[in-house]
Length: 118
Image (cartoon, rainbow, N blue to C red; front, side, top):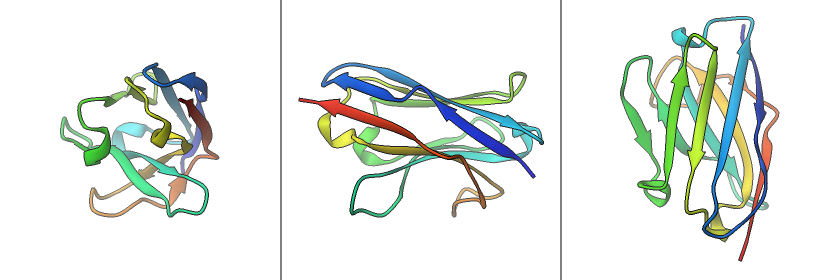
């Protein structure tokens, strides 16, 4: 069992940057495939970025070149660096831990709000 807590969300102007953090407890993040998902009002939750247990990462087309996922297994933390933010990036961002790279895992954080103003 792993518990996930996100932080780092907030209000930023278009073109700005934010770094989200996901701190884990109860289990080692190194054993999980880690992902960041987001959900805007009235929309489904979608994958933003994913990092396997190794060095493989995957990104949604809409964030490629702007977002970077990284993991610090020593700190049991996963990050999402978001640059050149756009109003359409506005959503609640969730951290996820699972066992495969094809579907979301069963462990979710509580989410952190990111709002990008134009």
